[in-house]
Image (cartoon, rainbow over all chains, first blue to last red; front, top):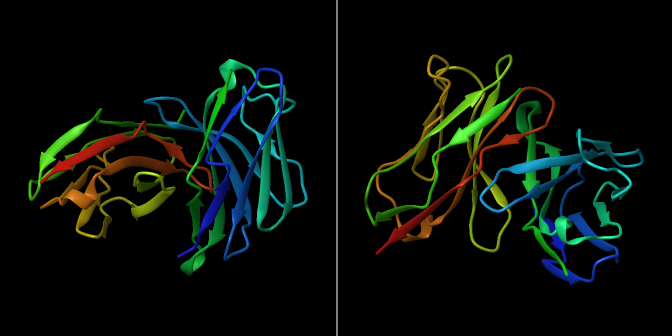
Length: 118
Length: 111
């Protein structure tokens, strides 16, 4: 089946630094990629939707200058958490969307990145 | 707005026990409904789905029926195995490709 690779799986950084997370679709081209954030014991919250070559669409309440998304190709999207602070510590998950049979879209998920800001 | 509510876990069962994880939803329009599973250290995987009322999704022994009258999509399996231990997410989509997830339910199956 389709594989989405997310890297790194875990990162610890100092407050004020920036962190980049990569999301790659390994064996398919993604029409759309999504970035989610998950707090402990809570749902995955959609942060933004991105399409290759265009600006990401951010959900209400998500700071676009804080969470920079670049979707450089049909197989790669990156999320950069700029000037990270402890409140940005969370589990970030990406997914890549592609057409399955009968015109349906299926999302394939990465394994997630645990960000800890000290 | 759209939302999904699923039962809190963890759910702990013995091997071969019957499993039910409840899921109810609130949505405008006619959503598609999904169950995703996340095994330790892995990404979410689509387990099953249903796109209209009374549809039954099934996969790997798991089943869920889209009940419009009760706005529910409960996940069931007749006989769980230790390998079914994972986190299960109920989700909906109301068009386009955005998903709204429930909080997830941890399932632990003991041998």
